[in-house]
Image 1 (cartoon, rainbow, N blue to C red):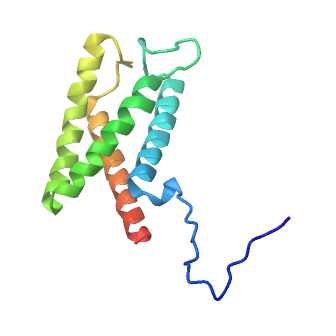
Image 2 (spheres, one colour):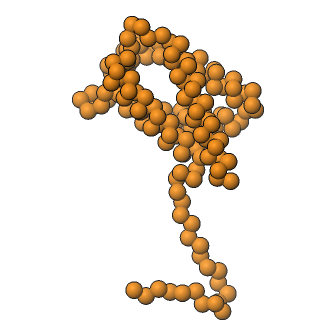
Image 3 (tube, one colour):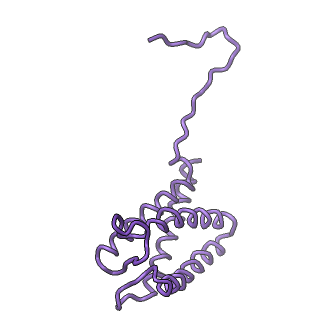
Length: 150
């Protein structure tokens, strides 16, 4: 195999090939982690019969709602991360608390629409605490990736 070598007397610059790795981008990496984490949490809770998704795409194949987990959640997490970049420290805490407080309301709405059902002993406080931890973890991972990048 013939390889072309750079001629040392040439005035042209060497072309440095930079590989683009998606995990270098903190936003994409955090969205990917959020999607994986949400998928596995849904699979765990559905497997333990803590909650279920009666109306979901591809019922015969998936026990979870993949439309939300693989479509809606990544978009919402990306918007969340962009909003977190726009606010100060108190705003970040407030935004995480606000979104965490909204999630039990959306959960109740999903129940009324027939998209979500949970066991009788489920408390919506669990949803609040779960999203509080989830969003905090995703944002901490995102900031760690940003520091690591550069």
